[in-house]
Image 1 (cartoon, rainbow, N blue to C red):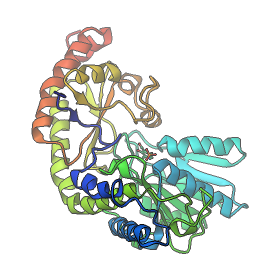
Image 2 (cartoon, helix red, strand yellow):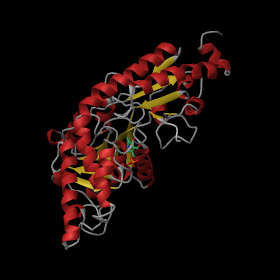
Image 3 (cartoon, helix red, strand yellow):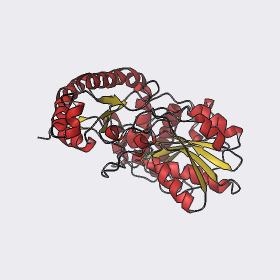
Length: 392
Ligand code: PLP
């Protein structure tokens, strides 16, 4: 039988909620019509796409017409930034932060190669954005400012409402990559100056392959995928109906579970964090404990390698990660922690624990039982590590 996994890697991807699976299944079996079809068989599906749009809009505090479905968070990020540049050809500058996900950073590198001007706002050693630097970068050449709502590695939350206001004062648009924030923290776009917001289904208990993009009413948006008239003519391609229904259902569930996420899940995260700091010498939390996601903690165990820790935790079927899912696999230290100026000794030994409503306190206790001896064992076989354990 499959050994039960202790899954604390929910910022990489999440388990599909049973209610979500149940809601989407009929659209893979009986209701396979095309929502654009004239006949009733297809037309009945259209209603479900609309319901899902309403559910997602409600989670975001937006109107349904402001929400379009995409294939993933990466597509939404790319579409928003490219659209802003295409719509005002006199403005050739993008401002973003050094700690964005590769979905934004890699696009920005390509934009630089294409002759656009990109500026990267630095962060301090807690990962907080340097707002003064951002203000100085803004000028009437700036087409768009793109800053994530919450960081996938540290969980840090950024003051996106304030940044949107500042961007608008300079006539620039504002986009936020809210892939990690949606469903975890309250969002009310109607009361904001945010122009574009990206999200991804698989981070909130819907399956992979479905995402969303909020485009504020009145903001010009250039199609990223060109073809048919789906999604109000803003995103071509036959709708991923099962994925859309899944995302709508997941959004409804996220709204219901938001308080639980911010209390019970946060309490488990805090218990894990305090327990690790208490039992492991030379461990430190990366990020800003005062303003971060309720489910995430990023802990550096100094003088050892994060990958070795992950491998030994894996022997107990504990699944965590040492960076973003997209950069893990390379042994490069995280660009986020590097931007925060972490000392070399802490940079390589960082582990991200990201919880969800499916975790339990028993699982947290299991990690607290298994991990400290792993840290001690790894430090025993590393000359620097012995110093960290205090017996040098
Ligand atoms: N933005 C952030 C902050 C993320 O964490 C991720 C995924 O890890 C993405 C964008 C990309 O989302 P997707 O996997 O849906 O393309």
